[in-house]
Image 1 (cartoon, rainbow, N blue to C red):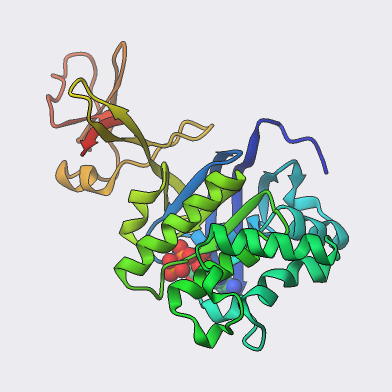
Image 2: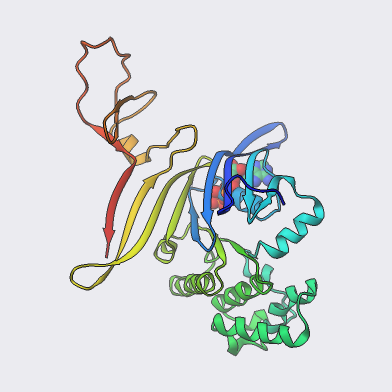
Length: 320
Ligand SMILES: Nc1ncnc2c1ncn2[C@@H]1O[C@H](COP(=O)(O)OP(=O)(O)OP(=O)(O)O)[C@@H](O)[C@H]1O
C-alpha cells in the first residue's frame, strides 16, 4: 500500500489513460479520466458503448493496468501492486459480479455452497462461522428458500442475488458489477438493483455498477457518465421532504471539470447551439458564458454575440 494523495476517498483516479494496441492500431479507451468515490457510495457508471466503462472497471478490479495516470482504491496504489498484493487486493477490496450470471456461480454447487466458496478458498472462516455467514447473506438477499438448489434450478434474478451474496461473502470493502441487470426483465432488474442497494446500505460496501439500463438511475444516488474515456457529467439524487410533507426525489445535474479546467459540454447543448471548432468564453462574476462563433475576435469594437449562450456548469431538475 502507498498513501493516496487524498486519504478520505475510497476510489481516486486522476488522469487515467489506457491505450490498447492491437495489430499496430491504437485505441485510447481511457483518455485522462478523473473519478472520486467516497467510502460506502453507490455509483452507476453509464455511457455509450465503447466509452471506456468496462476498461475502468477492469482496472479498478485489479485485472488490468492503466497505461498512465494514478488510481488509488482503499489505500492501494492500483498501478504498483505486486502479484501477491494484487491477489490480496482482489480478495479484500473487490467483489465482482459478471454479466453472465452463470460465470459467478459454479453449476454443480448449491446456492449455499457457492456463497461459502470464497470463504473456503481463502480459509477466512471456520465451518460454524461460515454457515452463519451463508445464512445471513441468503437472508439479506431474500433467497433463503434457494439454499439447497443448484444455479440451473434458480430464476435469473435469484441467480443474481446468490451471485451478489457470493461476491460479498468475504466482506470486501467494495463491489464492481458489470451490467448486473443485462439479462433480466424490467421487474427482475428492479429487484436485483434493490438487492444491490440493500447490500450497499447493510454492509457499507462501496459499489460501482456499469450499466446501459436506464432503470438503474432510480436506484442509485449518483450516476457518472463516461464519454470518450473521460467522466463528463454527473447526476446526484437526494430525497427531501417538501412543505406539503411529501418526500420528493431531487436530481441535480453537473458537468465534470477536471484539474486542467477541461469540461465536456453536453451533446444536446452543442447541437442546439451549433457549437463547433471553437467557441467564445465570457467570464461573469458567478458563471462562464459559452458563445457560438468561429470568427476570430477583431477587438473591443466588436459587438458581443448575444445568446444563444450556455451557462456552465449546473442545471437542476426535480423528479417526483
Ligand atoms: N482488450 C482490448 N483490446 C483492444 N481494444 C479494446 C480492448 N478492450 C476494449 N477495447 C476498446 O476500448 C474502447 C473502450 O472499451 P470498453 O469495453 O471499456 O467500453 P464500454 O464503455 O464498456 O463499452 P460497452 O458498453 O459496449 O461494454 C473500445 O473502443 C474498445 O473497442
